[in-house]
Image 1: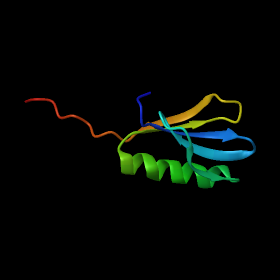
Image 2: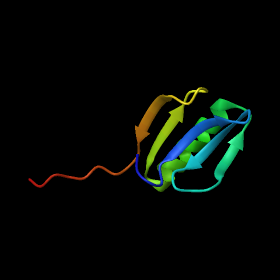
Image 3: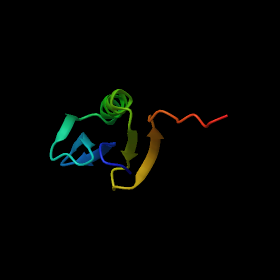
Length: 73
């Protein structure tokens, strides 16, 4: 994953959205669904990838919101 991607993770009993390369969580929620929605919105706005992790740290899903490059015709 590239610097700036958004990761939704469970830490200390809270779901957190962390921007890769950042020191602090961009937001937190006690509810997974709320954190995933907020992480998705942040990733879309920043035009980066959003990675949702399982409670044990594995990757559950990954979605890339970077603009696609157009190939020369």
